[in-house]
Amino acid sequence: MRRKLAVFLVVVLLFTWTVPVPASNVCPDAHLWSQRLFTDICWDCIFPIMIGGFPLGGDSGNAPGGRATSIFLCLCEDGPMGISVGTPIGLWEPARIVELVRLPYCSPTLGGLEFHITQSRLLGGAAEAEGDAGDKMFYNFHYFAFPLLIILELLTMAECNTDGFVDFDLMYMSELDPTWSDDELSFYTTPEVTLFANPFAQMACLGDAAMGLAGRTLDTMFWCAGNWGGLYPFTGNVIQDSSRPLVTSLAGARAIAALHRRGLAWKTMGDDALCGGYIYPTIPKSQYRMEMFFPVAETSDNHVIGETPFRWGEWRNIPGYEDYVYIIWRWKDCCVRW
Image (cartoon, rainbow, N blue to C red; front, side, top):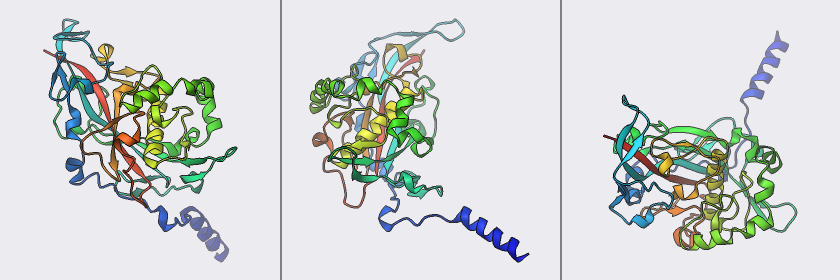
């Protein structure tokens, strides 16, 4: 009886014991669900709102170049007559949140919550890269649905709710994806990496980097992230001896690009998206803008993918806070039926 009891206690200890985490790796709280939800969101970034091809508020130059060009009328194949007539509308919306964390299963967005399935092999941070004298950083990411305008009932048009999300929800965790932490394993899911993660393809990114200096991006170079580096491979390993705002922005952009590649993210911009978004295998970079929310929020503007951090946030870091939360703004074109 005593032997059985001892075996039972050993089994319980094996399944409940966790490796102690150093105090420096405590999961921070981004305080998203507080007054910061109203004070630290760039509400002016919603503009311009394009109605019938004409801008309402803001500068139309802030709208992406690939937006819908239809004016006055748009037609969609639905309704009792087979075709519905409507007015084209386009706007920026805070649609997603991506958080980059060192401690696996740590979520600043969820108030510093730590899921109790931590694995020490997934710890992120800075380390020396193999094969050269550079430094390597690794971050896990968590991807949330964040339809803020719908949550606050500021946008109630069903036609403009492309993907159907109406509430805050966890959509993806990189800790459950073995390709995110292993470059070689990632190759087997994205073999095109051999075409884009090489010196010749990266030299072609100089044009995109030049656009990033001016706060613009090129959708045709979907493998480039402007001044941040290359989007391939789709892993959290970033060989950069640079600022953490740049490294975490690049990791966040890679996360979005990886979800597009796997058919988990939609294109919501352009004339062909007026009647509904659709799966798009490469990232339409101009469809997205990123706003740092934590640790130091961008409250008056956001930035495009690849925009040099000297324009928006090289200084947005606090010693001791190495986890970052970005709000992903997405341009949405929709046809509001009459």
